Amino acid sequence: MSDKNATPAAESAGLDFIRTRILADRAAGKFDGRLHTRFPPEPNGYLHLGHAKSIFLNFGVAREYGGKCNLRFDDTNPLKEDTEYVDSIREDVRWLGGDWEGREFYSSDYFDQLYAYAEQLIMAGKAYVDSSTAEEIRARRGTLTEPGVDSPYRNRSVEENLDLFRRMKAGEFPDGAHVLRAKIDMASPNLVMRDPTLYRIRHAEHHRTGNKWCIYPMYDFTHCISDSIEHITHSLCTLEFENNRELYDWVLEALGAYRPQQIEFARLSVTHTVLSKRKLIQLVREGHVRGWDDPRMPTLCGLRRRGVPAEALRAFCARIGLARADSTVDYSMLDFCVREHLNAHAPRVMAVLNPVKVVITNYPEGQVEWFDMPYDPEDASRGSRAVPFSRELYIERDDFRMDPPRKFFRLSPGAEVRLRYAYFITCQEAVLDADGNVTELRCTYDPASRGGNSPDGRRVRGTLHWVSAAHALPAEVRLYDHLFLADDPNDVPEGSSFTDFINPDSLRVITGYLEPSLAEAPEGQSVQFERIGYFCRDRDSRPGRPVYNRTVTLKDTWAKLEKKG
Image 1 (cartoon, one colour):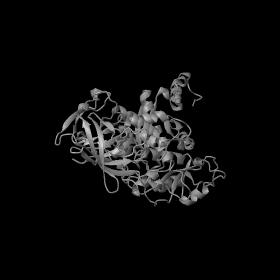
Image 2 (cartoon, rainbow, N blue to C red):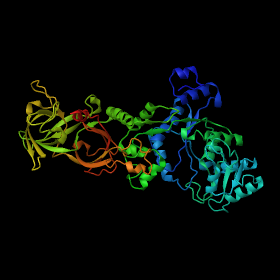
Image 3 (cartoon, rainbow, N blue to C red):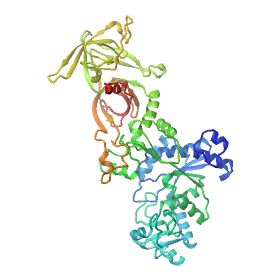
Image 4 (cartoon, rainbow, N blue to C red):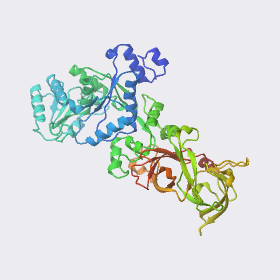
């Protein structure tokens, strides 16, 4: 998407509209050629996928063009904010590579200045104290087709407004008794401009200022002034603030203050999830998930716990790009970025999640061999580990069929397969229980095929992963799937709740069996369970009982083949 102020060089480089605008502003000497952005979360919840896009943008453009980016907490609502959220936000921003170089600010740092600015507006006749109830203010605001109605308190004198506002600050009135409103235009076609509230009374302890204040500024009043105080050049925000831009500019112009340039971009929407902070809080409080860092949550801490690499999130944000129109991205694009990164960086190991026992009848009882297996078969420099092999093994139950379909190149009666890095085996017998379920496979091996190599050039098409039953490490394996069944859980039929569409199988917990090399793996390490998917060691792991979270599956070509019949 082009910009009328774009430079030819920027357009030819194929840059997005925000970078194009930044380059045009710098070429024109706007802001003296400076670039200073900010990432301004409200500390009333944990960051999510949508914030990743904003972090990537604000810190990214500052890094690319030699500018600066602040981390600022817009902490104007003491009823919802907490230091817990502040700490988590810092951690998430650092994890994604954001570096604010010590420029950590809080809107609460500016409460004295904000109050002084409010008095300045009152003295200029541009703000007044309204003693109406919240319901009365709402009723007089009007609609998109009907103008609003002036408050009966709109024409109070400057002296009366100052007196009331100062008494509000002194704590003389209860919550809701008065608010301070901007005096703009109750007939404005932009509802935001119909005398918006600037301050409200709130007798509540603030996480940083304690009980010093009992009146708190509204977000729209605070945000633009905070940007101005910090001399931000480009205030980058999502489209939901497009209508608020007029108020942003009005406040700063009315105060005669430095004015940054606000630019809006489309917010991120992803299928099978919700990114509304209100809905995420509901999921946590109603117990639909196990907390903010539940790996099914789209929070950054949840994604991190699931094993999603920060590099994959950055690649995802780069792929979806920036636009001015809202759109929805399929979750599979994030999965693609995760697979792409982990395929290049995660070590390969073996695990069996749905085991059936294999007994190699001609293998010596009590014998154990150790095979040196590379962590990456295409890059020996990444090292290797020793994996034990014995007479009794586990393989995946799905790797055996009594009556195999066409093109099934795994194990079946009479069929020969290769055990990864070990030997060729041939199934001689399947032991069944009374219900016809396979309980054990009896096989023979070819001692001449050690290392999984054909001794006589014969072709074996199937290769299976396995673990030695005697050495297998039992593990709790958490198989995560989409939290919601609906593509868009935000768009539900009237009378329904988005929670009605929660996937009952979004988490399945099973016992898997891992190769013993994973016994001392560090928390958070990602690995590929060969032929299964990518998994991450969870913090709930205990000595002798690791816990692994499924990050993402591998592409399962066999599943597609089997569905086709």
